[in-house]
Length: 293
Image (cartoon, rainbow, N blue to C red; front, side):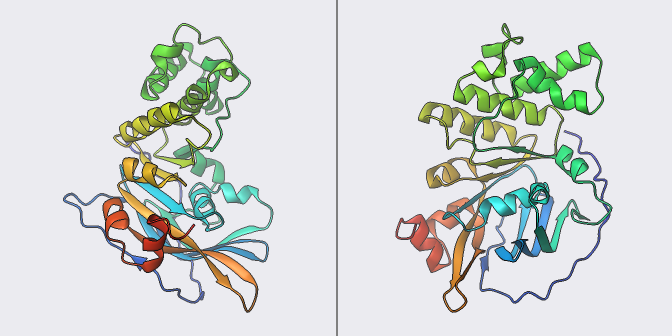
């Protein structure tokens, strides 16, 4: 798929945040893939609360990267930083540097709306619009100015096929998206996300509200989608991470009892097989073996 040029300008943002001990693996691959995101010394605040401290990692093209870790460790906070969803929270700010294809995502001239057109998101609970199945998928293209009915028909069919939903709904496109089952509704949301042809798809626990059969269908879809998209997924399901991801980042909570503060930190990042079978940090080992929640 031809990738659009980002409408952003590279800019260095420095930070004096202290370093934390973090094990970050540079995975060896037969074919090095392009770096889509490069995160350097990123800390994220909500007001005075530091939710995440000093995170650094790359995200590679046409791979599935899983974020795992306990609640409150900053997984979703970092995920939402990739498409500037945290901007919608009053008092949120980012320190450090986060680039997309070499350009600074947080430069002053960057439009968050333009970022979100290229970097789509699928949320934890399926959230179809109260519109028809067709209008759910056509919504984004219409917002972007597409009015040609034949072109919209093509986009809707292509997106529903890519989400492995077309055969199930092709004869009821005028029915409400709210009438679909949970698994179908989540696939509809994925079709809606990819209808605007993003470069990256972010998924925040996309199967946590689904039954096991629907979950496996979403996992199969994720593996298929990475042929055309770069995917970053937050999951509490470690088995899911091993099944779908190429690389895994393990986050944990760092507690400062003296100051009574907690913050999320990246502990270890590497190929998924290495993280689960031969972790280099004892905290990762404790988490993946179930000795730490």
